Length: 413
Image (cartoon, rainbow, N blue to C red; front, top):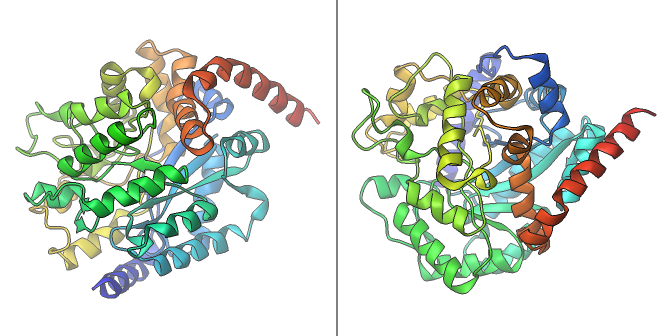
């Protein structure tokens, strides 16, 4: 079944390759906001494995060049998702690295947070590998050591469906949330052992709750996160909101637990998950609404940003239309696109305008520096490198000052 799915995905992608294009609108912004984004470490998220969003190297290279031109420091990049295997991981890794090898001077694969700062100083793209599935372990948690050495920095236990680790959000939507399994506990043990971040996005609520309970009981002080999840409460009272909402959105309780662990929650600027609102394009005001909702709920120290960017949603739409049994969501995704949703709010095209909007709402530069990248770096320093968060916070301002001095020196040569 998996090979069939992969083949269908690639066939759909190739069918649209000639017309594939990023459809997000470029929003007008002030020069001050555009410069602030360039001066700040900005860390987004690209959730588009080869064959489901891009099929040609040039597409990827142009996307990242646009990001660099607009001050986006780096991206959490999804290599694998759903039911992909270890061999799929190797294949995806090959495609990404092959594309990047055409411009090796522009990329820096991240192994520690210092690499992110180096990429920012040098004007490179910081590459932060993510897996939206644990199936790449092929049933053997000991493979986590290999993944850590490869640079996998975060992992989702279960994506949409039911897996050996537990249930994803779509299975839970359909009343089939089996909760965290003993094998899922083994996977968490290995994640913690090798400093890979537990990401609970797209995970069924019971499975996520069990995972948080397991983390709190066995690894108190180790944070967990939601890397790209919209708050379910944000659009609950909209006139056109559906009764159950998008199955990938999370409750306030889940967001609060992640924050209380020391982690963060990042809303994703992905239109089809924005229940009840279907604009021509996601607006800076709506993206700011997501950020503002989470800041008011969990505090400014526990919020990040993401896009879950797919390049061109027609590729995934073609697949969903051809395989309704795989996306058994009562037509939620397809209906969202039919009602006007287009692509994601691409960070390079929307973040400066979001900055103007958040300034208008009273956010300070320090607030935005945390939300755009600082909070992620703090958590990653803890999980990847074992740097206690209180120590990180004590030195954060010193590091910001030093980074600016180094950046000024680098560009003055």
